Image (cartoon, rainbow, N blue to C red):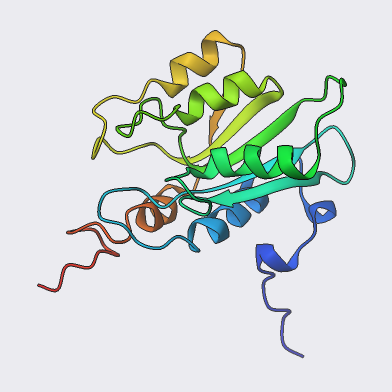
Length: 182
């Protein structure tokens, strides 16, 4: 008898999630990031917004960069979808967001940065991050300190940084997944 093949995150359900291992939801976020159309001028990021106050955990929304009109970022897509589908009640639930790259703290387009969206949403208590933002477009990301100032936990997920970074930079010249033909 052959050993059972490893499960892919997309085949698992939130009930299968181990509270001490954020890789399940980070893998779902990575699956979202892989849906991005490659771009030389933007990262390909995925995000999953989760209600971790209920068991099993409930996925509230998923998103990926440029999924919606208007140069949207993954976290922005999650919040937009959630608000369109389920207007929030007055309860004080705390949510967790899993994002393959740390939330941006500055946008060259002038749009609101994702870290500010997370803070202003007011319900996110924890941000799990697959990799830190490279200095490709913005020299210094200040998301870590902004979140800490607001009491929001920022946790880097071990063992997923390389894959998250490779997916994030697909389409960038010179990246492992770039479109460079040389």
